[in-house]
Image: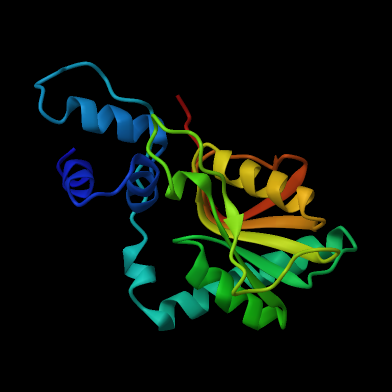
Length: 198
């Protein structure tokens, strides 16, 4: 609650706080609305993921990216598909995506999801691809992100890429909190899968 409140005070919108804490938007809303209360009501069922021990070290990121590249190759081979462009999801998916693109000898595209641009009460902004990186039109793509929580960001990215002529062959993530095999019909591979047993 304290960290969510601090981030809000720094001017971050709910989607950015969600990204920073690796929790769902629902959890961020709960954290912010209960921060000043002594409420005993239970919060949403969510798990916060802190992978900063990896993120703060280029050496560690490189090794994690190599492991992700390996499972991506496995998925592409199984589906007899290829990759021209790695699409990194801003912000936290970008370091991994750029290293994976290097390992795959592929181009790099950057997708900024709508949650990075809007507060929960203002749903007008849309996600977009940065024109400073690769285009996806008529190219075989994979999407790389850090954590799947609800899958909404990746669903949004798949829809956007479909509308812009990409062929999406896989989604690769560091941690899958949703425990899913596919999102919007695209196979999902992860290094770690977090699944609730209760």
